[in-house]
Image 1 (tube, rainbow, N blue to C red):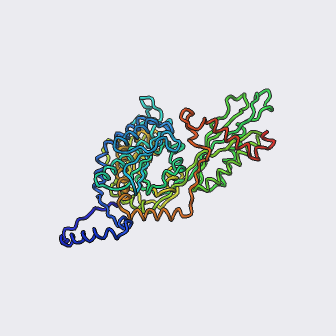
Image 2 (cartoon, rainbow, N blue to C red):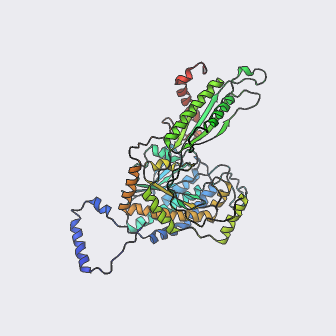
Image 3 (cartoon, rainbow, N blue to C red):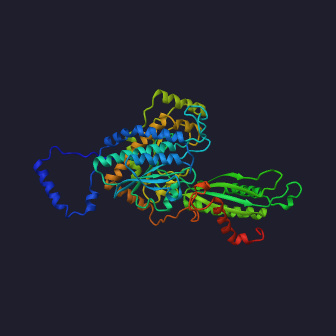
Length: 528
């Protein structure tokens, strides 16, 4: 909690002056670390909230601009440029662009020295979720088919607003430290935060703050799932499916056997595991034995170690399917994430701030919109949530976030604010519609207030920061971060070739094929 500096009115002025003189002389004798540990907060909660209110028009502007752009992961070129321009216009210095091989990622800074406070932006949309900001399904009139169904337009706007408010307070109150804003591009696919973590971009950060829109208000004191994303490809031999099928070897047969095996795995994996996939390529025509077939698969579980166990099993399964069909198999885990690591002092402090800020106040028109959207979705028309959830006790949930990798490198905590009606889930056109309205904007402003309050605590309350660090050190004792991304992968696999700096996707695939063929398994008669 941000504490208000109090001025005593009953202390004898003479005593006060003598004390100041004594303190001035003693500065040469007291260690600076002690002074830092005993430093008092010099900003009131009211001042922080007012600073956010001051930039709330900018939060609305940014949120609606990003919603309008709705650029999907790795292609958020205009969204990234827009956010960087806003930061530069407000006194931030862009210290990194195209960060860690992700063209639309960036880092911006204000101030210098310790402590270093990090705030995370996101701004990628989802494909095929575009919708007008109306409570029924209606394609956008401008033809944009992508949509902010996960509310990353609001994440970008709210987090930016918090950063602007904190920066204004740092200037006004002469508060020391570094405020660092991370442009976390492509969260929905190959999130930049994992690449940044691999390159050590969070090593000197004292604490990281983030937020996410949802249909509830809660501190994110949870454990999200770790995960790995896999590309599995089978290469067979083409033939006429009617005249000479015995001359062919079906890559699609291999995919089918592989997926049957995957679904049999489900009985024997942990209850916390999740396996989901699509068949990306299954051949070109029924009368041609498929030469190539491929699958994209995500494996999730409660920890990185559990995920790695599952991935190893899946690779063996792909080998088995190749043996059964006399095809070649390539199974690559090309991207992954860690589970989200909580931090108790940060979570408790953020809960206090969330309860102080409270829920947004909605107009009758906004409530009507929410209820109409619920009716359209077939859920009870209760409107927006009217409760703040108690502090969660670190439950494990099935979803994943690339914030997880950040949380294993620096103390991290986030907050959820209601941006869609109760019963409406993210990754839907209904969420896209809600995120493009004043309901979404109010969510972003509320989140900005909570983040700004917690951020000021990190910057000015040294005792609190020490508690945060001790909790982090206890949780990570003996841990050494190992990136879930293969060292050969220098940039996201999903980048179009024209945006790549390290060869084409085909070049990368060939390097993995060569690695696979060097393995003993691929020297068998079944592969020759």
